[in-house]
Image (cartoon, rainbow, N blue to C red; front, side, top):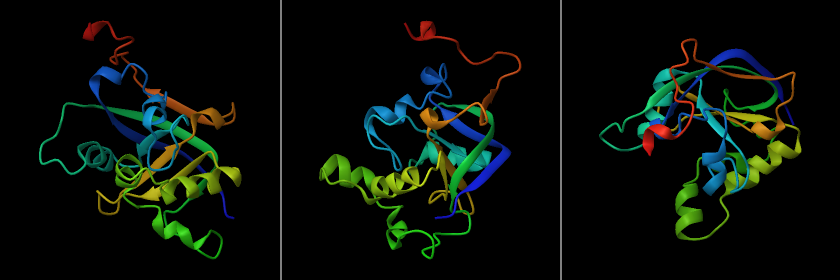
Length: 173
């Protein structure tokens, strides 16, 4: 299994304004699960380009909901890196199923999505994140970061030099 160091680089995420108070938490994905995390597993999904972050936030809607674009400095070692595609020489053939409709499988059918099994495989190999192609942004890349696995040698820093991000939920009370 091939794992590589990622970064340092800049990553991006559009946050719902209400939840921009905790831009590194991963708690939103942990609440119900995500493409590469089971419910209960903290995971922060970011993009490696601002355009990809916007498209991922918008999903398939013709309209853009309000959002706050946040930049991060990231360095993580190691990650499962699929920028060049799903290398089945070093990973299982099932990686072609990573882009399954995990929401349909889990929420509508109550079937475990293959992408969760694949994330388990990456985690078991020691990955702290997975870099994978976006299905919504041509040539875009996403990164899921498993927050609980980061160490002092890794970097996940929000770029907020003027402290413009909200600090708590007071604005929404």
